[in-house]
Length: 361
Image (cartoon, rainbow, N blue to C red; front, side, top):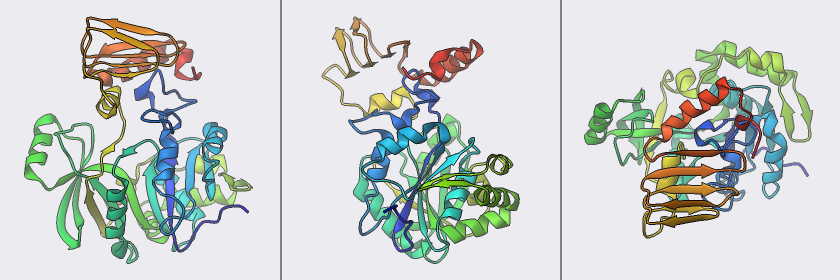
């Protein structure tokens, strides 16, 4: 039997539409980071699904993804097939993607919205935060989960907590853009800010009501796209022209920053967005010299390097603080701490129309 979207259990909504170019040359448009095994034997997508196993708390998931990745996602999800896989004709950011999922679900369905490419090491802490949010969710509140910051990070948006309105749950006072270093340090010192990890929980009808209020044209386009969708089993292909009429916008800008009943649950759960090669170095198991090694790698008198080979042998001698990534068709070398320069590398390769941005190694 095909999985059925639950009206009593929580429905994970897994957003899997990203391209993950910050982890080039391993991550590419046809095989982005969520489809790769970066921190263990399972892929990022599989680990996301496994955090919400079907049972007493969670029902089958809804996956929203790019049509380009449908076959690979179906293969990776054989052990826990989704209730629905919605194939976007093109990305329109998170708000339209979540609108599709909310419209496919029943109005009273509880939707736990998650990116497909993050790490959560303390899953029990995540589940405890979900349980803390439930009384407000059932009352129509929109919930976000705020990551406890451990450093003045400039790469994330922040959430300023207001008054506690339930045990472990605070009203959101403000969403804050990515700060500079000084402001991020001030946020950390003030102690009432959390990182915005992009994880949300709400009833489908509560989200759709907010979207109707703030982005009615987007909601109308999403409805029209589903009205004209092609359906085959659990696979849904929204009508392209209608969906492409959606304005490209994040859920934060479209709804969360504008709605009144928005709350945050602060949680410390070993979270990372795995947004760079430096992040993977921090997550990896280092040897006695601080090197994180994967694949056929030999080091001599080298320390604090991240080296990953997907084929050729890589040897390092007498170097420190490098990131080295080798696939069968590309090699990238840069200093640790400079992994944001991958974006510049990708832009340069785009100018040259280079095949390694698209073709999986």
